[in-house]
Length: 463
Image (cartoon, rainbow, N blue to C red; front, side, top):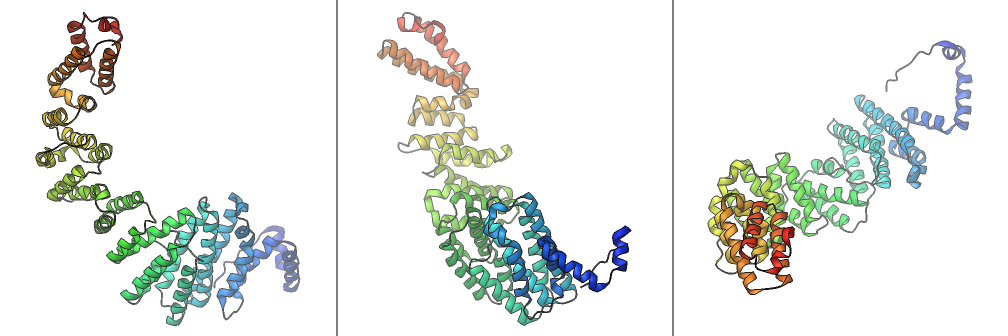
């Protein structure tokens, strides 16, 4: 391996030019005995020069001593020490890359397999507050290691490397720190048959099921398993992963949108199908949302309409969740969904929760009269108040008449302070929901029609 030589100037350069090799060797040895950092530097820089039938053991010995204090006491890893560790690991990575160029694959492998192990341990020990240097090194390392596997490496060495990686993975010595770039991904790429690939996925899933890891690493590991199942089209295993519920439904839901953002629609659809297969009707409306948006984005209006109908009519839907979904749909796409309104005419009594969902959708497609009639026939005055600000644009007079009729009937059958308190709540509710003009009209009518009632006149302007 080539070494860049630097000519020193000044007194230091003159000394090195004149000192004998034996004297320099003695001085270096003495200083190495007294200075641990210098000793580590010597090992780090020149360890590759030592012949060894098993280079992996050589680098394992060095890194275990170099990192022991940090692995035993992760609290000692601070900003300064993390940079020092990064520089050391990066030096070894660069050496491994240089060794590849001269086709010294055995030495390079000895470095890489230990970098994989020890950086993985460092990240696991420091999670969730892992220094950025360790994460950065992990990305660079995986890139370099992947490139080496694509070189003309002798097959016996490749098989040994794969077996070592597999053992490290299944023994919990290394972790799936990144959901996509990791040891499992490399092993699956190199599997020589689909059966072997699926077998490894199943084996690692079984291992991970009962493994106690730091939450962030555990989450990344399950996401990695899902990604690999999607990548190779293992639908049954994907359903199995979701059925274990090691990831929350919300995390799976976000993954679907992550793949949508990357235009990986096949992955999104597979994940939706697997989620529906496991969660069933209870969360159907939840996982149909991304399918609806996929239909809109890629020009499948019928698909989007069918999804919207199921989303709205789900007995488990709530109006706040629906409102969040509707905000994601462009205004010029709303007309696609008007046909659905015919399906939202109840033939029997419906719950207040379902009524709010229907009303939210109907006001969104601007079917205001149908919304009013639905709430009038199946709801109550308090639900009408919630939607009055959305209805008042076209139906102000209709709403004023509706509330006036209610107030008149109520005050005719109720007297005293409690009756006016009830009316005050109605007016206050209208104002809180933005229907100020309606509340003002009702108050004006109230003062005019019930001025003879002491309970009304007593409150003056406090209504």
